[in-house]
Image 1: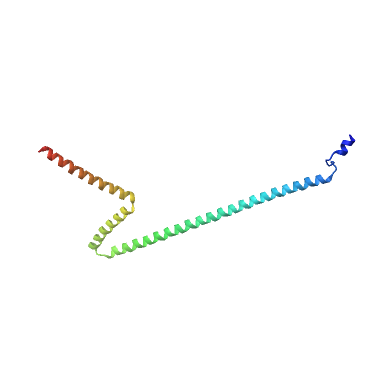
Image 2: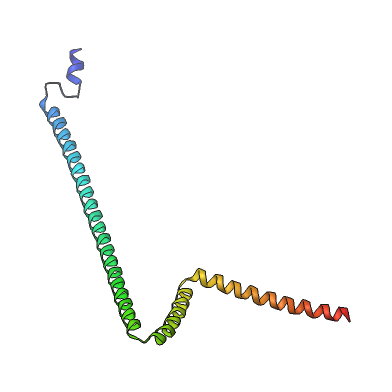
Length: 147
């Protein structure tokens, strides 16, 4: 048995070299794990910063849009006030004529601006035309059959 121990190529348990290798390998794995966690944290931080920038841009776009709508509303209010002042300044008869014109103009603007309403009115006009054409055609046939 003593010869078996002498011929054993493995290092004895008292050998500190293998323990140093194991310790060094463990340190290396711990360092790699720490680097991986640091990299993940950095990626998460960068992603969070990108999200913050995106949200800031979205807020800025909404602010600009709201400001534009506010300016548009103010301009429309000023225009309406000027129109009211102009109507009040005219004589009564002239104001009534202008009111009718402005009412018609407002209706036309509303109809042309509202696609659904325009489609409904267009469909009604087409239906009336088709009914008239059908009545004319069918009315002409009845007169000939009576003779």
